[in-house]
Image: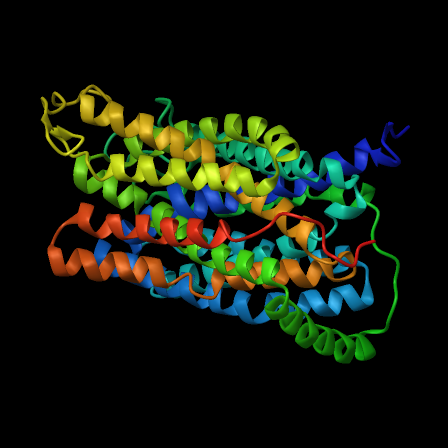
Length: 462
């Protein structure tokens, strides 16, 4: 029997809450294994002609997905708000997402279509799961009272981080192996007879992500109550598009929402660039390989999970705006610290010994880099979780999906800008730290805009 907690005047269905949060758990391996730590490096080094070409092609696919999300999310969100039944939209976009995850297995080295398969699967898969996430986010206000939104948001993000950690350990420990040694990060031979020479373990993370999603997303479909059906699809399209225009006008007229969406656009650009270039930067400045970068990813996932466990209660106690401000300040301080580190230097001026050959995280620069990166991981999750809860506190409840679509739009509309700025400055200066310093400007601008936002409930909520 479902356990129900009384919280103030509202009731919380705990089974529905956990089932809703399992969506983040289900989706996270795509972002951890494919987008960041396993398949993306495999694509750049094993499928593309050169790593530089691979990085460029992966960036084009990312931009294409971002453009699709920017165009589709607010429109589909407005239609879903008019029709109700958000779960069927999640199902609709889950089907191509699963197909794309499975397709990564067929992007084999030497195949004439491997690059096209990988890029198409990545772009369509990213588009599908990001839009499905918009609809999942919009169900939050129906699950808990307003005073618990921050904790619910952080709970979902924490499960996502835990899922990323678990899936990364499984993939690096049992699937993906070093082609030279034939061994995984844990020293095992790959399971299921996966061939290290052809890096089958790197491609196997695609089907693994599909199966993981398929298993863990089911509770959301089974146990989370959906919005009652309201309008038919034809009239909903007309009503939804009309409502979208009204929401855009409302957002421009509502100073709080407009400034928040603008701030979200700016600092999310910086966050996208930070994670997009973090692995490249550590490889260039510290000489890290896949094992070091993968281990660093595990560390960041652990600190991110711990940060989320603290971020939710802080959000509910001090407000989402305060949490976001704190996180942005930490990101700027730690980001400045990261660009002060190379293999023999910390904090720009302090010279130190390079790491001994074959040693694992033995040098002071590596340890400082890990410490600062751990702090970045700890605040990145609460930053994004509190953005979700702040929007819920600002937006009108009858247009919640639509406003999550607008937030997705603001988060993707200029997502190419920060990576492009980093690339241009790096090319002009031939300096990785100079290029990465641009990210701090995006965080500072976003912080300045957020300082002008007042956290309060949407005026017409009653």
